Image 1 (cartoon, helix red, strand yellow):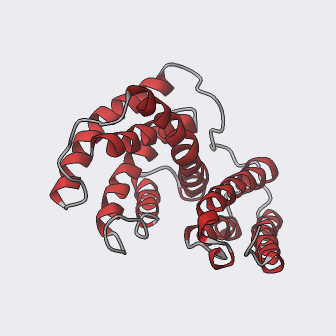
Image 2 (cartoon, rainbow, N blue to C red; image 1 turned 60 degrees about the vertical axis):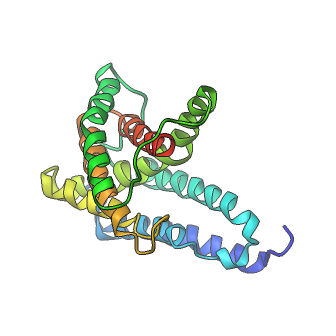
Image 3 (cartoon, rainbow, N blue to C red; image 1 turned 120 degrees about the horizontal axis):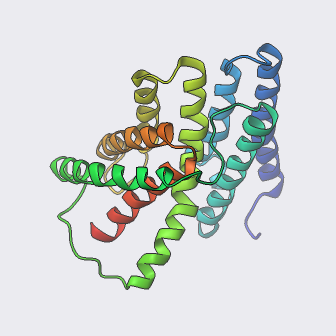
Length: 242
């Protein structure tokens, strides 16, 4: 690709992939059959934070940054699943298809309860404008739901629920404190998102509230697809109705 320093980019990608692997291998040596070790959590941070803060993006032409960011996110998720589901074999990640109707109605019921809270809170703190009728065609709106699920909701739910929340639960239990911690982490991940000025505390507050609901659905369901479906409904509603 023109304008890319391939040597530096290859070195960054190699280091990025190796460091989490090393941490997980060390963790398996310290705690082969026990709960997640500190090195397991460090590995997740090493997978997530470089992408969150756009490490190496100055080496890539701006027109290609969005696409390559998505590719890097996909690689990070696959590497995380390989390390924690395959190599470490932690239970509770719920990387499977729905096992019953409960996995489908849970996110729908949660959306009915969550949406009014997010709308009222979002408008009160100045994050959401007044709602409006969608201006896109029904076909485009339907296609957008699939794109949001595959490109945003499912990858984020794998990272924040199947990996981060689940490992916190395996290490510290499944009480409300663990759910709150996972929700705050999810909210903090949105501090560097627009459209408001950064750090975007408004987005972080709403994401924390939404993260609590996503986390509850993940905990009560048998598949990460349930929380991903709720996440999709929230993002889709915001995109087309606000």
